[in-house]
Image 1 (cartoon, rainbow, N blue to C red):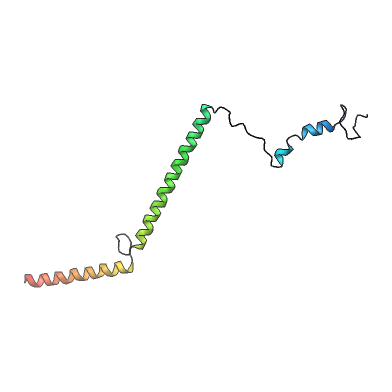
Image 2: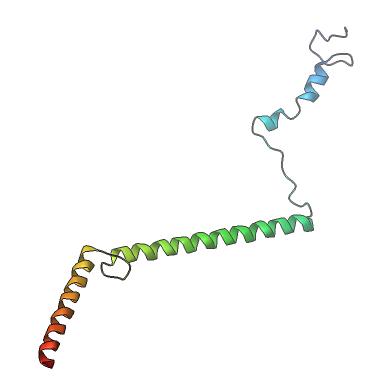
Length: 114
């Protein structure tokens, strides 16, 4: 047989065997992943990284939950027409009516004191 491997069959001098060994992981490139060994021991460093990531994730979830709760609270404040700090036309009318009533009571009190 010649060194170039013209027949296509494997021989010690052909490059077909090299091509085959070079493309061994072609299965991984087409989506086939080798089975993982899940029985590997977890190192202390890996556990610390996982715990730190979990704590960070929990803190992020807590902040998000607090933000959502604050948003619900603010939304409820916006729905309630007459709470302090939210100036609405209805609240304006009530304040002006209250001021007018206080002025009227002051005038009545001044007349009674005469």
